[in-house]
Image (cartoon, rainbow, N blue to C red; front, side, top):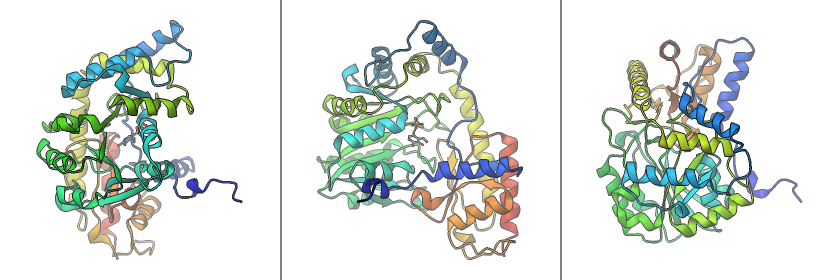
Length: 400
Ligand SMILES: Cc1ncc(COP(=O)(O)O)c(C=O)c1O
């Protein structure tokens, strides 16, 4: 009898966390590594949010809370859904969890049975397939392509749906590509879903506020109100508010589903951190003024990275609508040899050689289900980005 669970043997640890750890290890050994692998903003949590947390501690708001969130935060989520998307939710339709990740996980744990399929467009955020596997479901990967800037088409969605499909996971702007779906592009997908009433939508709107060049963010229940009763709209404060360490995510959806998620959470983490919840109330209800200047900075960095990468022979990098990632193709570099004599057969070979020979840490595309590519996170200083891109240019120019 195996001591470890068979379910666990089907999943892999997060490759993005592994890459970040490897880069940190080399750095600690004295190497001048530039890390472009971490998925978090490089700026601090805004002061008003920190102050709200300090005030919560001083007021003794340090005890257990309701399993899926304090009333004040649920109310703030309802107000945000109305303000930003025109969607009506009551607090009983809101679930707060320990990060966006736990909210998604709770929903999958609460709904998946053996044989249930979950359609996931690739490239995908690394955790979706593994969370589905942990919850006992079967991920069905729907591949996109560089030609559509990594956006799933209606035909591709239609082809992935079977009678066993329970969920379609949608993520815009996307990790790892930064691709954001326009209202029309999203409508094409929701039209497909209208034809398949057994399929529910789990939309991960984590990068909603990180959208550039006038891109209008839309969420499925807003674009197609007929999907309201089978949509779980997931979001969180981690990225836009630079609160990755506070661990607060939330979801809004049908009350029956929210109650089932509450049951999962009450038997796992009990409740999200009380102090972080009060900080999140301030994040959602307080000033949003810092978002625009932060986005200006992200646009500048995105443009710098895209232009420097596109100068490289063999690399092709679309300009994404949002998030803080780009996902260049290295199709033109496959088969070449590095100065240290390594043949680049895969994008993992490329990322490994780039780290070992040029001291730049990126995440290889296979981790996100679409190759040959790599992901750059540009949530780091302009100077570090410029130097990293210069190193990538030099490394690629030396390939034979
Ligand atoms: C698309 C996407 N969804 C969810 C999450 C999880 O966010 P959190 O840190 O709040 O768990 C991430 C974090 O990287 C993400 O990129």
